[in-house]
Length: 348
Image 1 (cartoon, rainbow, N blue to C red):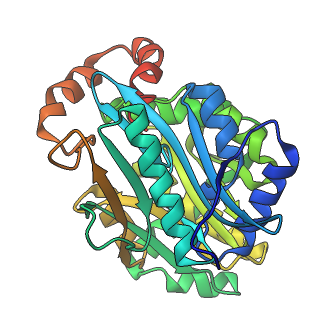
Image 2 (image 1 turned 180 degrees about the horizontal axis):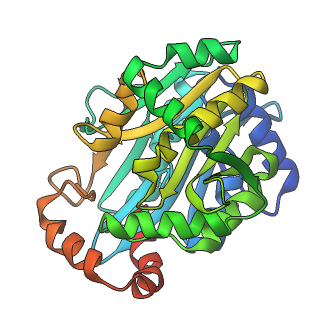
């Protein structure tokens, strides 16, 4: 391939280019659900962020992509990120020279915007000389062909919790909208002292990705919602991504039952991979996923720093946010749900 490329920018109104972008994504083994073109629409429409979905063509065929969005606030700084609200991102290219051209153009855009840094949320390390964040890991595991084999693959103590949920006569349902999910999610994040995304974000995801985005809600025998998860489907994978639960869910084993039901249904659909998603090392969610028999794989978030000396730490582990977290927990949930979107849009 030539070492000189014209890097183009995807436009949401160009249906044919959007189609070809997704065609490339589904054909590339290193691409993820978060590389899909639909993120351009939902991020720009719901959050109002400027998006720069870069691609390179050769002979009318896309050979490399890099989705990016600008996130700017006084509280959390100014960044160009690939991709905010996603756990995987970065360059996907058929050739290293194409990848380098896309990264170079990303750097150019970041500097033109006056961004403090460029962040690429990659699974695999690409640039040995770039500063790297090692806070996050991901958990992925094969879905076995038989339902009972998947049950027996869960470590004994965790399997007992799943069986407890079954004994409690819990039931799972596929919801047509994000209503029950949002109520459980918003209550859950409020208890943890973090801002909630607005319901319109989840409804936009369900609308944009259609059958590839789905809400599963667990209820007790009387139909009371206990736990819910919004999952993405990509090729032969299921990715439980956003979740929430009632305070009573733990005692009833509703969360354990929820993920088992998602796995069981995925097995019935013939899917091959259960992607438990990103966790911060040393957290409760990290331990929960380990207890299911999943092994962590480090994520390689790489940075170019322009107007800062160190990688930003915009996460709840940062000590400077502890007072804010404690205050948020005491705030009435109606206030938190109103204020939350104004904060979370700047976190990405």
